[in-house]
Length: 113
Image 1 (tube, rainbow, N blue to C red):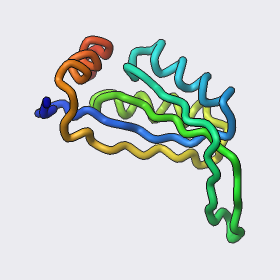
Image 2: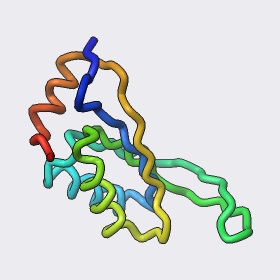
Image 3: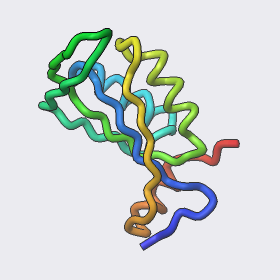
C-alpha cells in the first residue's frame, strides 16, 4: 500500500441530476487532466431538505479520483457546468491504496502549483 505524503490523493463526490450531466462533467475533468478517472453510479435516491421542504430526487453519483493539488480546478469546473444552484462537492483524502493505482493517478495528472 502507498501513503500519499505531501500530495494527498482525493476521492471527490458529486451528485448529478442524470447520467447526461454526470458524463459531461466526467469527460471535462478527465480531458482536462484534473481527474484520472470518474465513475458514474446511477440509481441513487436522495432525500434532503431544501428551502424548508423535504425533497426526494433520483440522481447519479460521480466518484472522481484526483489529487488535492487539482481540487480547486475540479470544483471550478463543476460549479461552472453543474445545473444545480448548490452542487454537492465533497472531497475526502485517500489515506492509502494500491501502490500501482495511486502511481497511475500521478501519471495521469500533472503537478499543479
